[in-house]
Length: 345
Image (cartoon, helix red, strand yellow):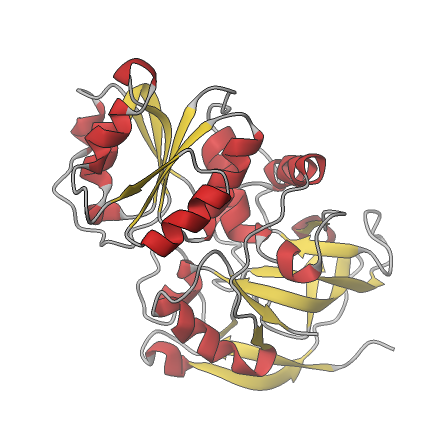
């Protein structure tokens, strides 16, 4: 028998910071004929989840909203016309529920879980059958729940516009979820990876994960030129995973190869930068904003994860559901390496 209520973490608005995040009980939505009821086992956080209650998120929101975009769980009930899923299937949520294939459009851009639509920080959730993908066979729930946003964003960065090729060079910034996924995907593709960090301890872990070169951006503030010198013939980097914003974009332009792609993922170092889009002209490159990805891209990513037995890097501190707000603070304080996960069941 399906439950009628579910415990859930809700964001009330943007005026209370993390105090606007509260644990409450709400009704389990009715399962429509094309819907699936999922018992969520795990969820993970993204920088996006942290800045929504802070009022800094640049995309659509609607409050109150159940927090979180990333979730993995088990199908417990299906609607009468559902063809893709059956009871007992293991599934992962799609970030923008309306983004099924091809380039994102305006209607799909306002279907984000945990922003406009109720998200994954709850025990049970109802989703359209097309808003889910299958769990990779080689991953557990805690690992699989990290794929929705960070995993798919990095896959889109490397394969969405122009596909990464063996022998190319990828530069990843820091040790957050998107950057670590990009490192793993790039190594699986036969690419050379240059990683940046400010921590010697994290540099060792990056090397163990397969990074060919690790640059300390505090010791080498001109790391963009250093990265360029590490590429064949000093030609530059083919793909850059740009997460720092104002703090890193100048160096990214110094590192990029002619016709290379700078994928703009975030703005951890601030959004106000003196660098202009005109910089793409003298550097003859593409700077591209990446807003997660489609279900079709996610299915391709999952096939690659299974084929290469890739396991997401989850931080050692996995939080209980009741301590989700502590997980937010832990990530905001930058205590994590890889993905911050929350066990729900």
